[in-house]
Amino acid sequence: MSALSAPAVRTAAEAVAHRFVEARLARRALADYPGDLPQDMATAYATQDAAIAAYPDEIVAWKVGMVPPALQDRLGTHRVAGPIFARNLWIATDEPTPLPAFVGGFAAVEAEFVARVGRIDPEQVDWSIEQAVAAIEALHVGVEFAGSPLKTINDLGSAVVASDFGNNAGLVLGAEISNWATRLDEIQVETIVDGTVVGNGMAASIPRGILESVRFLLEHCARSGRPLAAGALISTGAVTGVHEVAPGAVSACSFSSVGTIHCRVVPALP
Image (cartoon, rainbow, N blue to C red; front, side):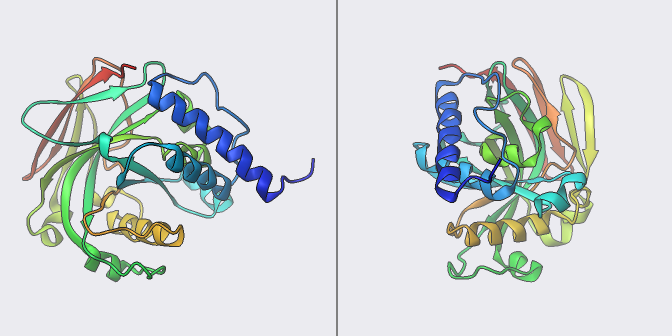
């Protein structure tokens, strides 16, 4: 079978994107991937771009996830990015934050560090770690709510993950970490789901570190024609792991000396 032409790839990507967007807006699950599985990141991000264009909301943050080592050489990357929209950004309070999960889809809680960037040069497309650190205006604790209408999204690989908003359904923004640069390496993170400890970790648990996630995302967005504006948030990766949950679950992500973020998973209603 011959390779698809570029216009055909765009058309196929748009068709998949619209199926995902329709499912997300209707709050319903998908039984299968709605098209041919993307085999490379270019196709995956073409689908994501089409979905961003079709989704009726503003991007206020981005998530960064890890590509499994076995896929990194073939896909040519070690991280994957996805947008987070204004309607899916919640500020943590003393009460559990309700997280609306697609019934029959995928849902998971992930304890993460969240960077807020300051003003950056929109023309800059190459980023070093040092430049990325300088761009961080503040660092917060947070919880990424991973989610997709497709239950098997993680099983199908990182290109599929990228194609559906990076498997993101929202972000809970927690407290700012004062003097983060000197404290980051000492913060212990624990995730509890339904009363059971399901994961422990630290910033260094993220392969290559959370600052590499910031560098990657700044460069990825700039090269994709979406340079970050001041105030944009970057959720940098699952410190204690990806913990799958279902409606009814309650979780607590604790960051030593900073605070705990409590969440409860609820069914997403149309």
